[in-house]
Image (cartoon, rainbow over all chains, first blue to last red; front, side):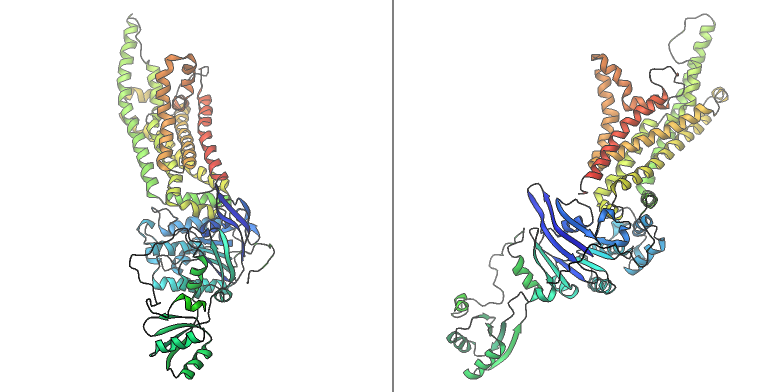
Length: 323
Length: 298
């Protein structure tokens, strides 16, 4: 189990991590999300004793990382895909780690095979692609068959097979009772992998909940309606003060229960050929939550069209929503 | 919210490796594997050996010339001529005994560079994060690296000195080789060269860890070993204090430490030179340890 309590890391006047607390329980995959510069990697480095906290504690199974009698079998970590000497072979890299804990050399070969690197294990790391480096980093993390696993962006550079493998690995480790803390910017991947989520922004915890609870934070009462008589149906909605937005050429995103919308269609004699409840994705909830927390805000392209919502129609406006 | 509130418990260890623990010996073995699995280290060790043995061979030729001059001067004195300045025959014999240290100045720079690169490349490649995650006790990590690099640099220094001596036997005048045989002085010279290389590796590892940079570490070693000596010798005439200090500079101490035939009542004996040199090398080694142990690894 990983425990972070009131953890703060200050660089000069700037707090990279600002009094955060969370727990990564055994047998669960906890997703660690946040924009670039939010403090995810710093938190992981603090957990692994690579940096000293300004205040607070970061504990592995109740102990400070540096005082663990057997770090390699307590925590397996992937912080950086290429945190290894480029002039050394993958096998030699793993053996140099294994021998520190008296693990047999055959264990290095086992994790090499497990990560699909058997054919390239004797090659120098400098010739590895990002994906191969990532696999080697994961192999190093698994070397001691640890009770806790920390993976920072483990699917970066991996091919689809590798992405699925990491997902299955995380799930398998959790099923064996391992606590898994995993950070990623791939929301679709995280939504399939994580049981719990910790969202961080500008060094502070924005959310700490189960995936289910997190998704429930979203506004899920919107329904996509498609009809050939959109203008007519929009007028009916407006008469009843129901908020909506126009979508594409024949759709309306209506903020009302599905049954009520269907009833309105019947009453108005308007054929609704699609009525689809909209369930927010992890990405949507995350983007809404971290909109104001990003350190590096992207600009919009000139002439960039607004996605989905049609513009220039007399009824698809924000004012409608406010009715 | 599902955040569990669990109390700190006994660390759970892997079911597969319940009895495996991190040990200092393991850390040393890990560093040893790291050292010997890098081609760069072997290349640099080989270059060090070649340079030191090559310098020994060249010096053997010079010793032959010195021997001829010393014999001529000895015969001239025997026929009543005034003695001329220059090495005596006995001096030449001592040079031949100590021929193992001929390439030591260049060799020591190389071994210091090996030590700098041993740690500096870990920072450059970010391998240091993996190293410190595997062996989080910084002092143990540093000592393991120090032991490994000490072993290899002592080994290469000793072997280079012995090989230099061996190669020189093939080139030296037979009258010199008949007079000079392997004795305690000769072996002491080889050991001293090995120790000198080892101490230089401490300096290299220290500066490499302190600056966390290959180029910076090597430059600092060059400054302390060469630039400082040259600068101090240039201004030595200006002050008696500086004159007194020059023999205590690391390069001069290294020469005194390995020289064969230093009198027991000399201003600085072999042992004293070795001890003072150790101080010069321990300071950067301790600074490097402090940087590693007391600051973040970034």
